[in-house]
Structures are given as C-alpha cells and as structure tokens.
Image 1 (spheres, rainbow, N blue to C red):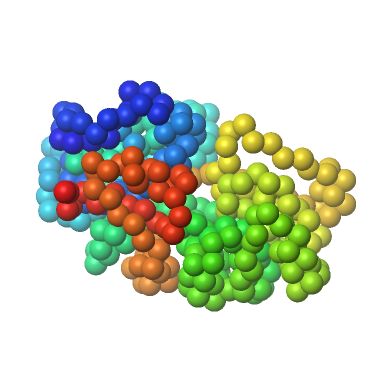
Image 2: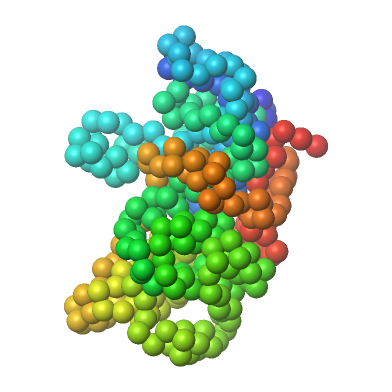
Length: 343
C-alpha cells in the first residue's frame, strides 16, 4: 500500500509499505479521508508525543475491509471512524480511572501507525460507525472529540461569558459547543477575517479582528465593550504571546484555558499576585479519550456544523503540499487528505 512514512523527524517519503494485517481483536480499514492539523506539523518536527519510524495521520475514517476472528460487533463494508487513542489500562493513571494521562499513551498517527496510508488497522473497541455522515464530515470527528473534551475541562456554567482567541477548525467547533452549552456573551477574536466570519456565524458569536502587529487594537476594543472581563478566557491559537495576554481579560474567579498547542519550548510569564487576588484557575485541555460517541452525535444532529470548514484537499502523494498549507499557507481552514480519489 502507499503511505506517508517517516524514518525520522522531517524525513519522510510517500512510498510503498506492507499492508497491515488485523489481529483477532482488530479490523482493517481502507482509509477514505484523513485530516491534517497543526499537531501533524508538530509531529513532523519530532514534537508532541511523536515516535519514529512513523506513519502519521490521526483524524481518519474509511470502510472496513477485513475483521479479526474475535470481532463480532463490526462487519466488512461498514463506514467508520477511529478513536486513535489506545490506553494500557494498567499504569498508575489508568488504575485511577484517568485514562487520558496513561503513562503508555499510544496514539495512532502520533506514536503508532496512522491514517496517512491506504489502509490502517485499529482495535475493534475504538471503531465507530459514522452513519449518514460523509467521509469529509467524518474527518472532523476526532477534532470534535477534542473540543468535547475541552468543554468537559471548561465545565461551563450556563450564563458564563466567554472570550476565545483563535478560529482554526477545532476552535470553530469548540465555539459551537460553547454556544450550545449555555455561553451568554461569546466573543471570538481571530486574525483571519474569513475564518472569523464563519466562526461568528456558526456559533452566533460577537467577533473582533486581531491585528498581530498591534495588539492594543483588540485589547482596547475588548476593554471598552466588556469592562468586567469574562468568566472563561480560552487560547485556541497555540501562540504563546496570545496566551500571555489571557489573564488580563479574566474577571475575578475566572478560568484561563490552554487549548491550543504551543511549541514545547514556549514560555509565558504569570503574575502570581494576579492569580492569587483574582482567584484565577489555569486549565489545560490535551487531546481526548472517550469523547468519540458524543462527537459523532453532535455532528449527526447538526449541532456542530463542519461543511464550511473543509477548504482544501490533497491526494496522498501531495502530503508535502498539504503540510505546507497547514504550516504556513493562507486561505485555508481545514485541510484533508483525500484517499478516495487519488491522482
């Protein structure tokens, strides 16, 4: 089969590799689509939880072509998506029922073979039928699951005022979830006017354009419109300089949510007296486990809309172009690899 294969960080080929065979508890899936996100850029650089050699791709869906001898709940021909997280079940955190913190966290596409390939194997308990969703929509299940986990971490109270920086794909999904969860004043700040307009429409949110060369413009606008600040302030940009600013917008008792993926070496300065005096909470949101079922239902019911989010598609052979688009391209929101229609 054809696959993106990394021998080491920043060194990959699109080449022929052996087609995997499912173990008795696994299924073989012919991949239809696989989303490309900023995490894949981090993995390309050897960051995040990446291990090499590696076939990346963690946002994939497709059709089951073979089932293992012990699999009874799935069948050949089913259209499915895969929760890429595989948890050991026996480490310190798993035994405390905190699976996301698994000390042996194994993630298809991050430190195990993933979906930038024509075929992938997955454990049957991590495979979900997608029903009427298209494969394009199914490429957004994993990002939606991460947003569902983010909503869990935020623990929003109905009537909370929320400010979020960033209008990338998962930010746009999280904004919709926040609206459905009861956010009162929901304000989105982003530097791309097209993304900002789409996010504002889908989440029925107020929007402010960010000029990354003149932060005082949006700072002053926020201070003027919302002088008492916000109950929840979210960074979904992954930019440390944006995250650095978040505590200034939080009202007393507020929460700062670190949702975007920064570079591992990034740092920020916190005023401890501000955290003490305002009783601020700083909360991280990393990936997801056990959120796929809810993500699929949000998409199937149309409570989360993603059709306007997918803007660019590439065949597997053009993986470098897709990666470049996500890393430093313009005009995109969600980029997917389309393995149904190879060139």
